[in-house]
Length: 208
Image 1 (cartoon, rainbow, N blue to C red):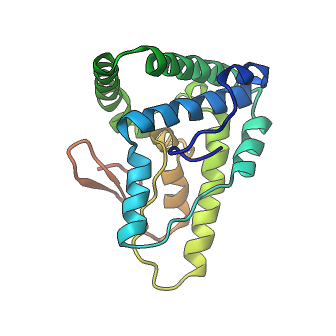
Image 2 (image 1 turned 180 degrees about the vertical axis):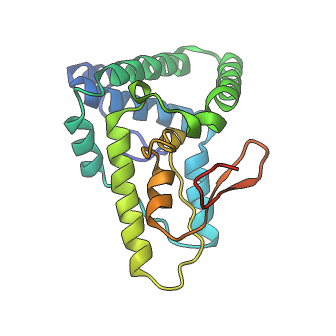
């Protein structure tokens, strides 16, 4: 569970000895490391910029907390984890076998599809069958930590919260990290839009 700029000395073939919930997590992390090494990564760049210019970086969970939650929900998330493993393994093989030009074309197409079909609309997704139970549980953990931090401080400065876009899904069903924060904080919340601007989430819970 190292960061995206480092890799471990564990061989990829060793992952087939792991249970599905752990194998999916490790394959996903491995694919992210290879992707970061080729193309960089938005989350890592944002955190670096934030730390460099404004404020300290805090993590919403520890590795043991993540592993505990993933294992607790291994049965409910089984189908999701299998799909996650397949996608990650396909990405890993692309990184290992494709030439540079093909790889860049694949990456550009993938991101174009994600931005158009998924990322900007994910907040409206409401299918529990596509929402990992572990993701909802992690949202609760993160929300509790953020709320505790904000309530214990005075003169709170602006906070930049960087999470995967899947953690915004289920806003109206109260599964989303945003809805959990909105329901428990008297705090202005906004998110970044596909047009390159901040969109405020209003008091009624509507997404402008």
